Image 1 (tube, rainbow, N blue to C red):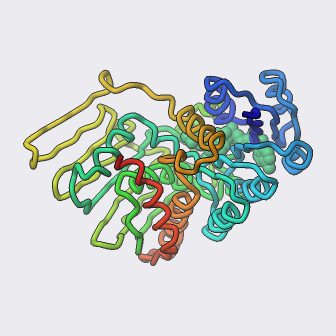
Image 2 (tube, rainbow, N blue to C red; image 1 turned 45 degrees about the horizontal axis):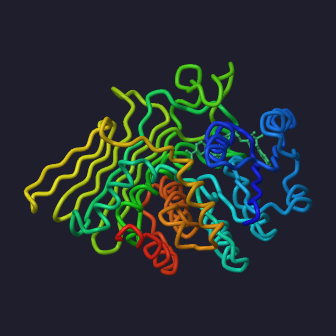
Image 3 (cartoon, protein in one colour; image 1 turned 30 degrees about the vertical axis):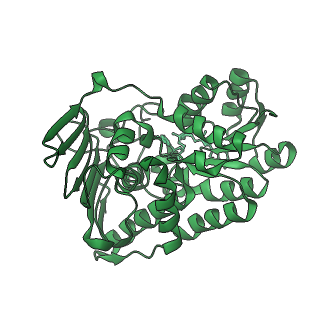
Length: 371
Ligand SMILES: NC(=O)c1ccc[n+]([C@@H]2O[C@H](COP(=O)([O-])OP(=O)(O)OC[C@H]3O[C@@H](n4cnc5c(N)ncnc54)[C@H](O)[C@@H]3O)[C@@H](O)[C@H]2O)c1
């Protein structure tokens, strides 16, 4: 089996702190690395021995890598992904895969025309609580789902970097950054019902107070830094078959503690994932089961995405991608995210138009969870 060559585009926090360790643990290295910041390229070259570039197009042209990771600011994900796919690479796109539905659908169409694999970085699916919950739910463990909700709430967590807080690069704030993860998780757990409408709300409340409300990622806030994007978002989403979901995210807020929580309710049981672990309630079997963190194996979620993605490429077997987020699933996420902004701006509930083909592919891909 010839060695798979890997290129990283965007050498910031997530590439160096999560993706690099993940592929190294799997016995791979970065062969080619690209960043518009020459200093970042230099230090990545020193750290990994990769061949460095400041222009991704030049790297693609010269090196024809087998795999490209896109870990740049959101605004550039789609263009780089499409160029990399057209150049013959399989792509791993950080979330959100695009910042509008046209771009997202273009990525989906491009993967069909070039017959390459493309996945989206919603690594949270590989948290052991989430993967256990997904298996329970998809094997019928809570019956028919009617409601789900997700919260990712931080007290002081505005990321003080242009990538996240400048409109030009991020296109949006907490909604693109963390509601994208929350919606992916709820759709993954509930099996991709078709969204029909949404009432969204976003607000920029603490953008001028980064010294108080900024986090330390990737470094502490610099004096005078300002966030141009929203730090709060919520949405009530209606789906076909009478299903509804609620999502709430904040980068900063006056709350008692940080909170990450997902609840999925069915007519035969319920699942809750939170900081204490995974709870599974079912009155039908007269069982009450709670698994808490000490009993749950710790999984490196980024490594797990890479392990499966590289295995699918090595075996040329799309089925092995399950349950990594596919581009069809990522495009549904983007349709919902952009509708949150649209609804917030207009103050009205808006319709969501997701092609049936995306929903069918999204459902089909999760069949592995039933085995
Ligand atoms: N899956 C996750 O849990 C997770 C966590 C953090 C970030 N992310 C996503 O990863 C992406 C990057 O986040 P980060 O925290 O690494 O940000 P970062 O600011 O630390 O890094 C981004 C890097 O991209 C570089 N860059 C900008 N434009 C470029 C271009 N055209 N070509 C090449 N490089 C370019 C920047 O110079 C910077 O070094 C974001 O889209 C973010 O949403 C995902």
